[in-house]
Amino acid sequence: MSDGAGIAPARLSPSEYSKNFDEVKPPLDRHEAAVDSSRCLFCYDAPCIEACPTGIDIPSFIRKIGTGNLKGAAVDILSENIMGGMCARVCPTEVLCEQACVRTAAEGKPVRIGLLQRHATDWLLAQGIQPFQRAPASGKRVAVVGGGPAGLACAHRLAMLGHAVTVFEAKAKLSGLNEYGIAAYKTPHEFAQREVDFILAIGGIEVRTNQALGRDVTLGALRQDYDAVFLGIGLATTKTLGIAGEDLTGVEDAVGYIERLRQAADLSTLPVGRRVVAIGGGNTAVDVAVQSKRLGAEDVTIVYRRDPDAMSATPHEQEFAQVNGVRIKYWAQPVRLVGSDGYVVAAEFEYTTLDPTGRLVGTGETFSLPADQVFKAIGQALAHDQPQSATQNMPATKGGKIIVNADRETSLLGVWAGGDCVAGVDLTVQAVQDGKLAAHAIDRRLRGG
Ligand SMILES: Cc1cc2nc3c(=O)[nH]c(=O)nc-3n(C[C@H](O)[C@H](O)[C@H](O)COP(=O)(O)OP(=O)(O)OC[C@H]3O[C@@H](n4cnc5c(N)ncnc54)[C@H](O)[C@@H]3O)c2cc1C
Ligand code: SF4
Image 1: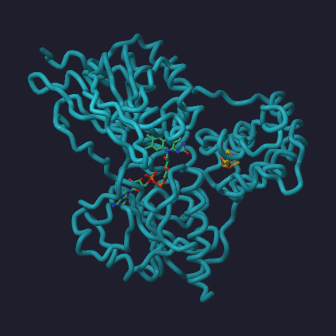
Image 2: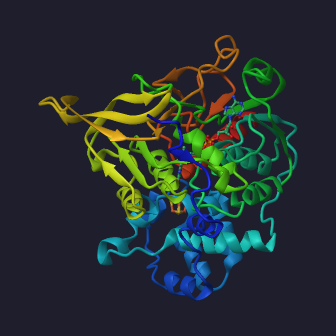
Image 3: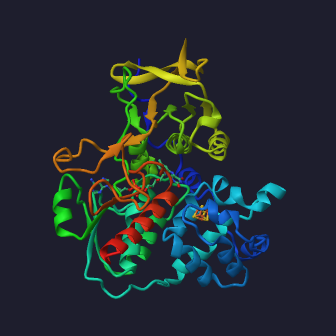
């Protein structure tokens, strides 16, 4: 019998909480940055530039770090990626720029591009320098819906280009998942908010928080009142498992739990299970599992239905989970959650395999994991349940994502979209690139191009 006592706050001492949620990847000091920058070969047609979704001129900024020109390095980075500071902390560099670094192939050890990027951008933010200026006012007004990486990157570029921008954000704070979702130990010390302040300092961006599309404003009204609209609304709902027991106490949406964790003023007030199971194969599953462990859970298991290669969490992230004491079980899918007195006590799984046609199938053989807390981390979806969304003529979608063309324009004239709400995006750096591309496309349209 369970009384829910398996989930409890204050499992650790104050010093353990602060140690466990301190930054996992500390910054480079000046000497380390000089040594790392000297390893760059400044390749012609550098493959790392191609591998960065925002196309930062990496050899150029590294050369500037090497000559002590940190401002020039930061401007190189931020001109292409206004969230260069956050991306330096959260990009899976091992599958992006650093994977492409020729030193990786030659020596198995890339130039630490992400950390060098952080070295330069942190310096600029600490100096309080505002390197960008606005072009003369265009007289055009653009509504940006959603103040996450895609929306803020779009808003900043539009402001630079001289347009007046209004950001409508459903939540109380800007920055989207940078503020509410990314693992706490990747971006501590309120970095997301410091970056927001830096972005807004360009001027020309009005922010309206607690304003949700579908609740407080309609797309129809925005299209009427503004010259263009950009949707950067992310994916606001979590997919359900569709199995018995999902409504038991202790069964939670992983993204919602991480949001509570990120917003907790005191982590000792956040209850966590003794035995935790996270279902899924992406960043979210890894992050909720590792953070549960660091909150003091004793036994944490991620269960994923395919093999390690199919997991969207990179091998590096899977290893990080394991190093943190999280067990990963592959080839199993949930069949039911077992309860007692309304509380979850176990999760039952069926082993999976591929049939001769390559389709994932259950083997019929099952096993059970004891659990006081089960996190659903099987992906998110566009919020279809937004009030009025059915009647407000939203853009066409496919596979649950907004359809856009290469310029990020949707099926609706004058409405662009980018970031997680469109297909092919699931990283901060990709969302920033979408916002930037859409801003340039909007600018061309508004100038009659
Ligand atoms: C748990 C987790 C961990 C992650 N870790 C990493 C990582 O380590 N590295 C990485 O690169 N990526 C990571 N990601 C992915 C990354 O956070 C996203 O790709 C990125 O935030 C997408 O940016 P976005 O602007 O499209 O969406 P979001 O960040 O989701 O921002 C969308 C914004 O729109 C707002 N909004 C939604 N609906 C409305 C509405 N109707 N009206 C007004 N506003 C609205 C939201 O409140 C939010 O502020 C992670 C994601 C999750 C869930
Ligand atoms: S933004 Fe990300 S992918 Fe691009 S260079 Fe920086 S760390 Fe690498």
